[in-house]
Structures are given as C-alpha cells and as structure tokens.
Length: 166
Image 1 (tube, rainbow, N blue to C red):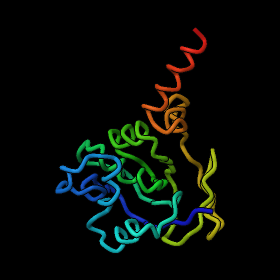
Image 2: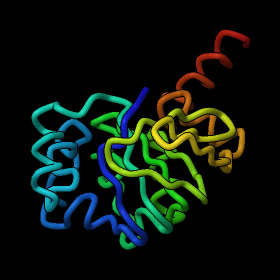
Image 3: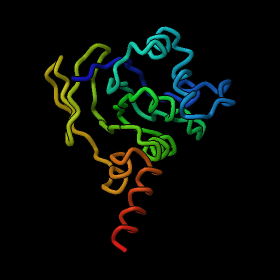
Image 4: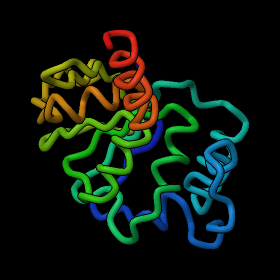
C-alpha cells in the first residue's frame, strides 16, 4: 500500500514542482531530477530512488498553479508519483492527463507524511487514520488517456485499432 511521501498545502505552483531555472531541460528522461528541487531533502530522496513508484504526494487546493509548464507534470511522472489533491489547476491537470500522470481529485483528503493510503476508484482510504474520503473521478475519456500512459500512447492505440479494423 502506498505511503504519503510528501504532504503540501494549497497553491503549490509549477515553479515549486519544477523550478524555472531548469527550463532549459525539457526531455522527459531528464526532468525528474529537478522535481521539487528546492525541497532539497525530498529531491535527494527522489534522485537517489529512495521513493518507491506509486508513492503519494498529498496537497490542498490549486495544485500546479502558475505557469503552464509541462515539465512539472513530466518531473512527477518520471518518478511514477501519484498526486492526491483537494483540487488541481486546470492547465496542470490537463498536462498531467496528457502525460499519463496519475492524479486524484479528493476534495476532503486529510493525510500526513508517512500515512498509508489506499486509492480506489471512488474513494481514498487513509489506513493510518481509518478515515474514508470520496474522490471526484475524471471523465471517462480523460481517464482512458491516463490509463493508456498518456495522450501519445492513447492516440497510437486508437490508430492501431483503426488500422487493424479497417
């Protein structure tokens, strides 16, 4: 069961997730090294691969606000983190979907670092506290893109299906 590896508040900007000084680095294979670069201890854990894939970042409202930089979602996707937040900035959420980053909208989430979470299709259960929190599911079409691994794999899959059927 995934653990919360980072608990954040409201209005976490894309600059906090992926600082602007690294914007010269845009390749998805390189962006993960700069995820939360200014949170030096957490960034060191990420870059040393001490954070298991599927680990959870919990946040408040408006996660990913600020600029429209796609690298913020790419950096988190590179570590296979799951972001459970009370709400997401619109552009960040679309970038996350397009890149296949797992995001969970959970308006009443309450969790601390170290808590064990079970993320289901309709709720998040905090196994540490025993509390249950309903989620707001993504629309089916957007969830299909995430499930495919992002917009490019989704489109590739659709085109191949059309080619085989046609």
